[in-house]
Length: 127
Image (tube, rainbow, N blue to C red; front, side, top):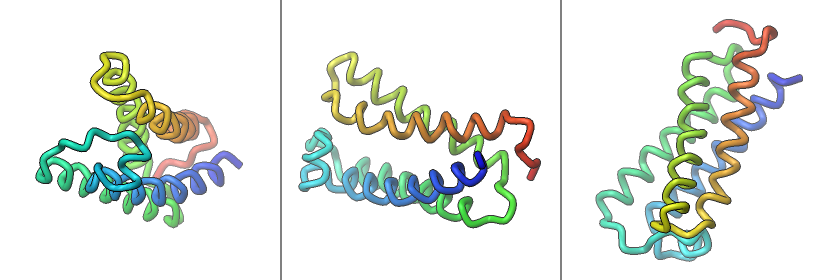
């Protein structure tokens, strides 16, 4: 049951990452503005971050369809998701960004927690 939830959250996260990558690449666009992202980011940084977010999204989608979920890759994914929330929360707390990115990144925290929960469960199959 939990593995099915992990697979579904991986697929959902893949789609969310693509949307986030677009918002990060074009922070002054409609989605970036909706997420209240800082608009004065140099294109180099915006595109590099969007590229990395896209790569992670592809990884989540790929993992969701694998017969056996690769545990080290899922662990990296979980750490990445939780780390994004921690970074956004710290920046919001410091006043560097609005609270909206932290609220949105809370979904990353939830996905990362689900994945860690499965990884630490006794029913998770080693891959």
